[in-house]
Amino acid sequence: MAAVAAVYHEFKALNAEVLAISTDSVYSHKVYTEVSKLLINLPFLLVSDRTHQISKSYQVLNEKIGASSRTTFIIDPEGVIAARLSNPPDVGRNIYEILRLIAGIQHNKATGEVIPANWMPGQSGVKRDIKWIGRF
Amino acid sequence: MNENSQHFEVAQPDAKAPLFHAEAYNNIEKSIVEIQLKDYRGKWIVLFFYPSNFTFV
Image (cartoon, rainbow over all chains, first blue to last red; front, side, top):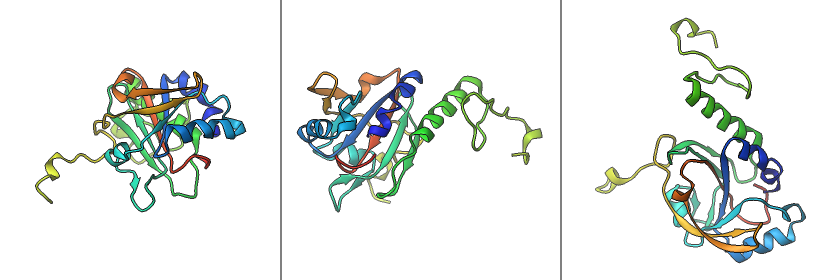
């Protein structure tokens, strides 16, 4: 969670809010921020999905352990899912990739340009044009 | 296919994000708050589902 907190300002710069969700209680969430030194200034909410309803509705509940799987959703300002990323249980997320993805989706929405592989913020996208087919 | 399948939407790109309300811990204000996803309309939202506190994200 500290990895997200470290670049929280970059999410804010993209007009994005962060919500972290687990099936732990809010009491556990509180103690988590107190015990983990890197989370003392955690700037976003830790949501408690005690009933598992949120995890079920997003289809991320691991029913064997009663916990959410390591899954990231990017939701656009109209409330539509823009991206879904699933990580394996033992491999953490690349937070920079999530920032890049938001920037890419925003660039696509703003310009209509499509976003080629390994695009980075600040670069231009690609105009939809038949002449570019097969060039990327 | 079952009789409910037509009402079932897979939570993937282009689907409406399922709405929810829940308790959350606000570490800035050191308080327990009630939140609703719909209150965040107009902003991009990133949901980080994670298995358990005290583990990496």
